[in-house]
Image 1 (cartoon, rainbow, N blue to C red):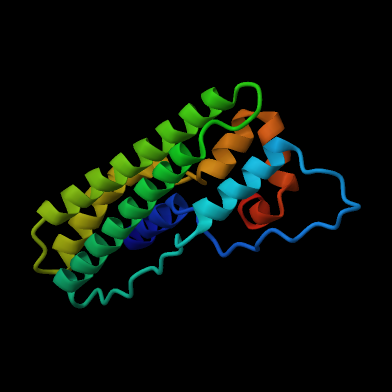
Image 2 (image 1 turned 90 degrees about the vertical axis):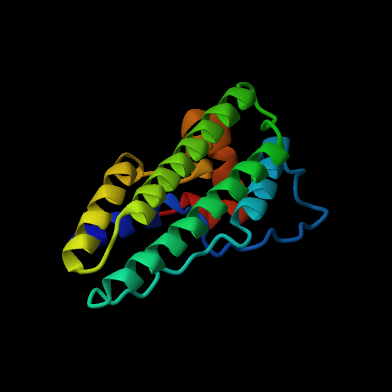
Length: 181
């Protein structure tokens, strides 16, 4: 149960999914508003190389299970850092309040990465030689991850904090998989 709690929290912290690309437009189509174009570019870059696979762990081999989760959390942290970098590179969305929305999304990304790092630090520090030790390690790590268990990523944060951006993400073809569900 503890394993499912922490792994579920970690999975929800990762927002990348396979994305569909932007389709080419006909000349008869109206021009794409700047906020929709920004959203499409952002979704394309934020989704690049973000999929992670949950490690297969054998609870009968506690030390190996711990090592697999440590490696997984390292990957999660790396992906979150990359997403923050991509958001900064994209710059503020071209909407009123865009800088504020970006700053809030960056803070949440950075806070989530810090929680992953704290959980991983505790996990690394816990000596695991049996299943009881593994349960202790997972419990300690899970406590740090718990408040970010519902984190859905920067696309959702940006869209929720700014209605104009929310509409832009809904209209951008490259964002469909990140705003649905």
